[in-house]
Length: 439
Ligand SMILES: NC(=O)c1ccc[n+]([C@@H]2O[C@H](COP(=O)([O-])OP(=O)(O)OC[C@H]3O[C@@H](n4cnc5c(N)ncnc54)[C@H](O)[C@@H]3O)[C@@H](O)[C@H]2O)c1
Image (tube, rainbow, N blue to C red; front, top):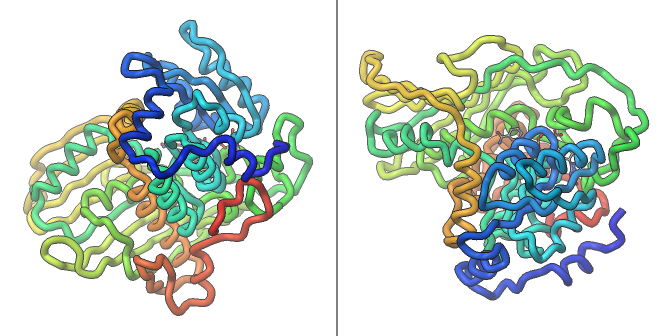
């Protein structure tokens, strides 16, 4: 599908890169119509999370969804309906994301495709002069994440990652208190993803359904035949398309942990154990996993820092009172932050000092994105931050697969002296218009 190749498309759609951030923001803003007019957006991949984006955007007065794009005709039709609420006009419905990107009126796109499409679609969108809100984990592998950061900077566009805790008041309050020293110096944080997932069964390849353009769904990933337990929703349990539950739910709390630790670089040492201990099905990623990350001498006191990630996705009960979350260990207290539930602060000898409850705030994360398009500021979950969080998932997953200590160079983003793990910082692609340059 889609007669135009990548280059032809970019020639017509590219915005000059020599202009400054403010000027470009002003230009995109002018296209959006000015302070009192609606920001024009396209939503790419309105499936599970993409539907939440469509519904949230359709409830905002200052936003107009001009296009929805999905490779599944049924999902596309549902997205049109979800966008055309409260007297709003129906958006155009397209099956090729390049048809959204070549619209001059579109200022920003929301990308909620499976993970293997995040970097390809984001890079194309940035090259086409669009601001991008891309779902987490921002990348399928470490190399893609770096290319996304470079593309956002080169094209001077806002690139927000869908880790919405960064815009959520409950989390902002907790992190501010941690940064102000309420629990003293924090050297260690434990993150957990503990919940009950389903068994995806064992299936054989079959014909894709007529309403799904499976070849475009696969995109730049190497060809594998369609299989019912590989596509919608369940792609995340396959190496080729997702990053397991560590990259799926784990990444939210890993991101909060990084934020609290005030770490702005990759770890140097990573180790892990885990595997499929519980599910007997086709899923490839671990259902049980413990990863440890170590940073050498970071922060104002130049001490080492550590993050421990635990995952058990067959456990129908909560850890520390929260399904997912992270606990910060300071030398004066302990701060337990539950994903989308609340937090509890403890002083010495487990004295409970303060608690807060609340949920994650998706509309606030959208608002932060739009404000940054208008102001030219970096968003709360800027792509560089998203790349750090996603890289921890990729590194943890690689260490779990090879079952040993990895020595990682944060600058070159390479794993040293490991012939098996080293190549896993990137992936194989097939020849496809979406394949990013430089992968
Ligand atoms: N931020 C959050 O809290 C949150 C929650 C859930 C999911 N997510 C993220 O959202 C993304 C989507 O997850 P999901 O569970 O909704 O998956 P899903 O499979 O339900 O939806 C993905 C949609 O993308 C479509 N798609 C695939 N390739 C496409 C292409 N090239 N162009 C247009 N559409 C395409 C699919 O047909 C499908 O409708 C994932 O990255 C996931 O991690 C984020």
